[in-house]
Length: 309
Image 1 (cartoon, rainbow, N blue to C red):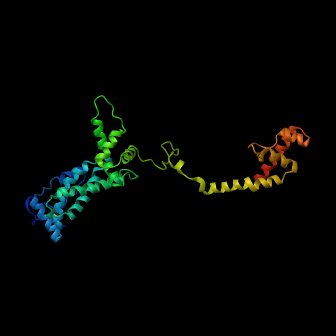
Image 2 (image 1 turned 90 degrees about the vertical axis):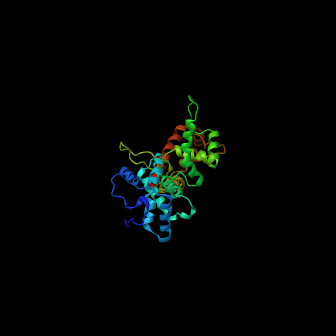
Image 3 (image 1 turned 45 degrees about the vertical axis):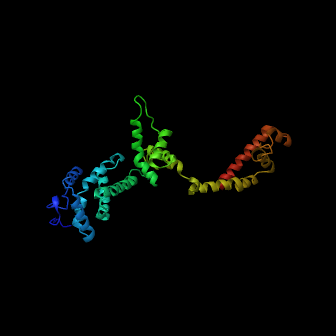
């Protein structure tokens, strides 16, 4: 871009359209504050040259003379935890968009027109970067995101002396916020909850002590379709059906009936089959002998099932 400003009227004569190399944000702010403001006539002259002749020197004049405005607007958004320099950079993008679209025939000053574009770019940047998960997507949510915090502070400031203002909004305050911002009471409550929370790492990784951290991934993971779990479930199903049947086939008839009555049979009352005493009476042996046969049969079945696994 040419630095010749011979055609530029007023205080801009002799000013360069480029910023010198700067080493800090404070130096940048000092530099942009040195650019002179434009009178209405100078602004109209530059805007028409840009629109009619695509004069880049005129565009530079309009941009540089309003950089101090971007610095001032960006300072209002420092409470969102983002660097001032980044906010200024995004605001400058909005300023350049405003200069490109500015119509001098509308009879308004560029500062009034550019304010909307500067704030819009800063708002978009904050919404995308203040949290890992975007908090506001609809128009109503955006209004709440940028106004609810300051409105809550105003409620606290207006509380009677000696009273402790609770953190959560009361129903009356929710209704007042909803009315002023033209949103629903439910949207106010949802945004209040979102702003009160914070980002949580899905997998926090190792902690300072070297131990694995505990995060939502521990209880959000669905292990039903994990390959090892699927194979284990299939193996359990096989052992519970065909495996048990094959193990029973390895037993003699008496042992098979004792195991079936004691472990596998369920009657209409939901309880098991015959008791040790009942089986002992049927086979003409002692209850202790029935128990010994049962234990030997179960041991043999476990060995058969283990071999099948």
